[in-house]
Length: 360
Image 1 (tube, rainbow, N blue to C red):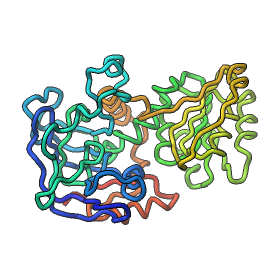
Image 2 (image 1 turned 90 degrees about the vertical axis):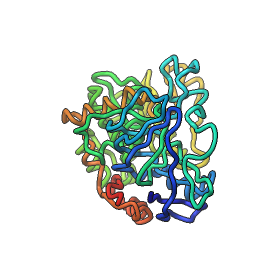
Image 3 (image 1 turned 60 degrees about the horizontal axis):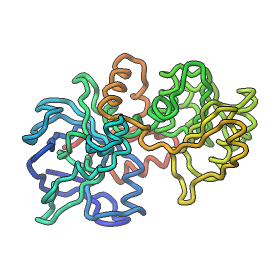
């Protein structure tokens, strides 16, 4: 099969013919129909590193073509969406409904041998998915079934960007009807947080960014107010709009000065949620006295505190009912051979997301 292989840091994505193993145990083989370009994969390929060569791509959707003998949750012909959340299903956290922080995520890995090989040598499988390929072999715990009528391109985005953005609002913060929400960073994941805030019934949804194109898009997704933080003091603007500060602030940027502004936007009882990591020293200094006297909290959020088997079908349902905007996330659809150019196009603020839909 054809797959886009990354051979080392800074080597880009190169289309090659590789071999895919047959499914064993709980593995599921899928024909990939769409695969989203996420910055996390680009980061692995350019500066984070890991095992090479590797097939990346963790926003993947497709149809099941074969299953291992122990698979019970999906069947041949099912339409599925993958997620990078890997969980065992048996540890304390999984049993408590917190599979996103499973204690034994390696349980989804093949015990012996390699799922992928190239010229007889093993190829790493990025995040257990390897969606930059015509086919993928994925543990059933990393897959959720969606309705057949769900279009492939928006379906692929649910497994990461939608889970992370909307999940931060609905699961991590438990935003309630009438609450005030601030979304810092109106990129693809931030837009999903805005969608989640709308679903939750938030009364005021404020988006901040330094790009007017992104802020215009945020309004189309449901932001009630937008702030260009390049030209306006965002803390002062939020306090002017809310009167007492925000109930929830979601930081999708992750650089110290911006995160500090997020903390200053909080009202009494408010929460600051850290999702983006835009710099290696990302973080915030917290005054215990201020946090105590105002009953405020700072919380790190991984994958929107999502239960993928529950949340992916939910977001697909919301989309099919016309209650969640996923179509406008997709600016461009490309072929499997065009990943390098696709990532280049994401440098343009007018581009929200790019999705591979031509797997020929």
